[in-house]
Image (tube, rainbow, N blue to C red):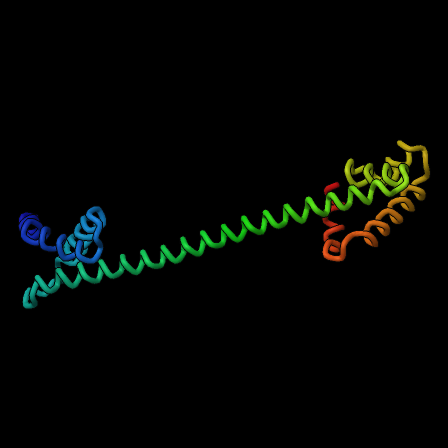
Length: 176
């Protein structure tokens, strides 16, 4: 252990300066120096005493530094990609919200053109989620009449909704 402390005292500052030239951040350079000495400790029994310890030490430092730099580049790419995806998702949500509001407005305008009974049946079905039977009991009309009102209302809406929103009608009818 005394020999390791001596090696640490002898090389740590030079190693720090070497690593800092690449990393340019004190805390990261210190961390890499610690990691290099940890690797040296782990392979201490396998070190070939006939080779230059200085070269061995700085090769480990260089490889560790390059590895961390590569990792940073990959993390930055990942974070940049994540940020781009998040912005795209936010833009998509805004666009979807705008389309939803436009379609809702269009449906509300069209609902005002229905007969009062058709509108009432449609709203009870789609907004309140009542079944045909529940609507028929509530309005004192037959379940078949409820069905006919809904079929004619949906046909009317499909016919008059802008073509760009026709597919979205099914979606909107679930939430009205």
